[in-house]
Image (tube, rainbow over all chains, first blue to last red; front, side):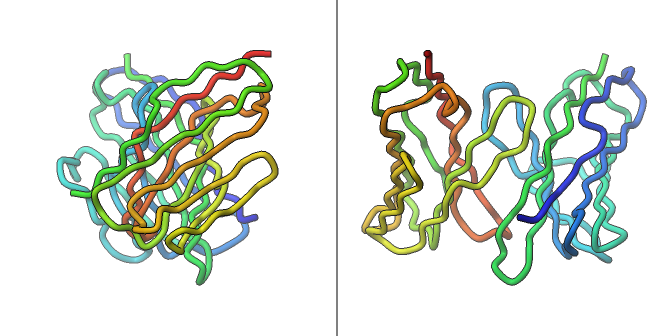
Length: 115
Length: 109
C-alpha cells in the first residue's frame, strides 16, 4: 500500500514558539492532503484540506492564522502551529488521497506537547 | 451536520469472546469505512462498504452496511489481544471524511 510519513513523531516546545510538522507521501503524488487533530481518547477531527499549489480550506472553528498549512509540492504538506500554547497540545495526523480510487492513507501522527 | 455515533464507547473483554461495534447516523452515506488505530499511530483502513446491505468478511472481522446506508456494524469473532485498539467508522467522500466517535476495545489474555 501507499505510505504516508509524518515528521517529527513527537515534539515538545515552549509556549509562544512555532512548530512545523511535515507530512510526506513517500511513493505517490498527492494533490490533496488532510490534517486532523485528535485529543486523548477521542476521535479525529478534520482541521483543514491541503491542496497542492493553492490555499488550504479550513474547517469551521479552525484558526487559519494559527494553523498555517503549506502544500508546496505533490509529496509534501506542512502544518505550522504558530505561537503555540498548552491548549494546542494534541495528536496531529495527516492523510493523503491515493490515486483515482481516492483511498486515504494516514501518517503515523505527530504528538505536540506545549509547555 | 453529519454525525456518526459509535457504541459502545469502551469495551473490555476476555480473549475468545465475540463482540459487535455499532456505527449509527441519521444521514445517508455513500460509503462507510472502518479503521483501527493503535496508540501513538495513525488509523489503518480495515474495509470500505459501499452498497446497502453489504457484508464483508476479513478473517475474524465481519462488517455490515445497513440497507439504508445510515449505519454499519463490525463483529469480531473470538477476539484476541492483538485486536486491542481504537476502532473508528468514517463516512462520506474522502474530501470530507467524517469520523465516528470511536470505540476503544481492550482484549485481555
